[in-house]
Amino acid sequence: MKVVILAGGYGSRLSEETTARPKPLVEIGEKPIIWHVMQIYAHHGLTDFIVCAGYKGYMLKEYFSNLMLHNSDITVDLSRNIIEYHNEAAPNWRVTVVDTGLNTMTGGRLKRIRRHLDDGQPFCLTYGDGVGDVNISGEIEFHRDHGLKATMCAVTPPGRFGVIDMNLNEHRITAFNEKPKNDSQRVNGGFFILDPSVVDLIEDDATVWETGPLQALAEQGELAAFIHDGFWQPMDTLRERILLDDMWRTEKAPWKIWA
Image 1 (cartoon, one colour):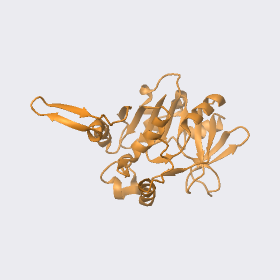
Image 2 (spheres, rainbow, N blue to C red):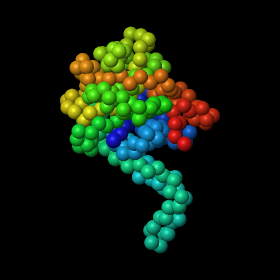
Image 3 (cartoon, helix red, strand yellow):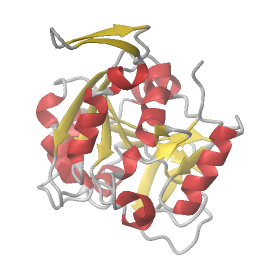
Image 4 (cartoon, rainbow, N blue to C red):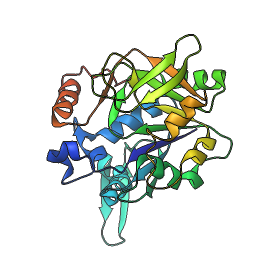
């Protein structure tokens, strides 16, 4: 199963960091947050990634191109222009980085990578700036059992996020509200499982995944809610980056589910 990561936004609310690099490359404990996200999926055996790049996307290409170099001891034979890698510390991942446009919205980015998806096979979708101890394997099984087009990980929010209304008996989302009036409900935590057919709900680059296709799926009864009561935290602000970094450095990072 492939994993699509939305990593193309400007990250304007974290401008202290993102003037120099895309937000997914902002570091938590000396590793970019996108690395942390990918480690969560890799722990569940998912190692085939599609990264939707945009703002400073060339830096994401450079990061993954040099990941082996940065994580291994090397011997450089200058006379033959050969690099020999020792201990091969880089993860066993396959990463496709796609330039999905500078100003493309989240839905548009997903539409642009459609050709890289496997027809008839579900895929994962998440954001490149949020972590949690989500049971991805359990969510995939839940998605298959319910047989709907889409499954959203529903989390308890730190605050200020779009809320969802749910039918608790059927685990179906009946409405999705991007601009809530209160914070008393569960929210979109990312970590989606999707059928490729959902891409047909996306019109063009201007389509916002959260305010168009998700709402349509909810209205059609095709959006299931996978309940996650564990840790979940996005990194939208400098305060949140510092919070996550402190957790990592003090070895109190709940999202570190890998060995």
